[in-house]
Amino acid sequence: MCSLPFISCSNDDDTVSTPQSETIAAIASRNADLSILVDALERTDLVSTLNGSGEFTVFAPTNASFTAFLQANGFANLDAVPTNVLKEILLNHVVSGELTASELTTGYVKTLAKGSASSTNTLSLFVNTANGVVLNGGTANNGATVVTADVQASNGVVHVINGVLALPTVVNHAIANPNFSVLVQALTREDQPDFVGILSGTPNSPFTVFAPTNAAFTSVLTELNLSGLNAIPQSVLENTLKYHVVAGANVLSTNLTAGSVTTFQGQSFNIGLTGGVKITDASGRVSNVVATDVQASNGVIHAIDKVLLPAL
Image 1 (cartoon, helix red, strand yellow):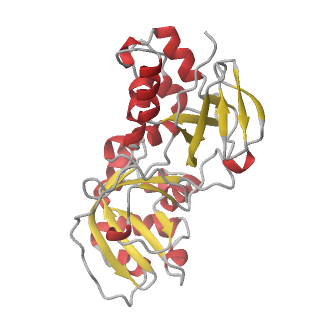
Image 2 (cartoon, helix red, strand yellow):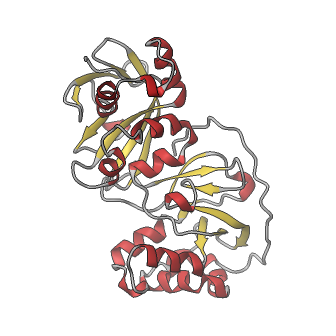
């Protein structure tokens, strides 16, 4: 598990206790508001998994959540969702091990789902406990909020949520984490290319994104003597943002190698592995990789502590 534990928070959700003699699947089957979830589990042969002896944390979408998801994605009903797609979506709601509401902290956990970008690294789920428990940025970002916490089972715990957790893209993960909020502002500045569309799609994917934190942007603005993000010229910002993306590769931290890397912008930077992963940009400035392997469905994110500058 990787994390960006920049925020210290607590959770105040009410908890609901049930007898712990029933499995997660059994608890879901006797809750009328989780009937579509149960149908989905049966259709994908996942009931036996959630009846098993291993401990799991399951974020369980309500019927209303599934209905909204189906409508938003143009599916007439649950049967219209391809079985392989539905299975990965369901696995994106399951985390190995039991995590009660009080044990959930702001940062990343790994689900059991896999996207198309990596066959080995399961998808990351961003948990934000600043105000309740919000997953992947909430429903506006294809995530959800916990509405009923800590339904105890014999093999784990269930948290009922108000949305279906779609397989997150690189953009979804950037939006979900408050420590990437300035990066999101830069990517969505109205004079920029459609970075949201590019980094949400499959052309040129998978992507490996080296994502500067908010503090990295604050530092570079001071370094360049700029008053704010809007003071960066259009072409400079566009080239700088593209310089943080490697197209056509989902490179995990364990597969990073020392040497030159060609970016989506066209120029290269150099990766060094001595004393941790470091990136030297075209100006000789060095950035440290401070969090790794945030897995999305179409790529992977590594957080860095300095904005990389191409030669302009």
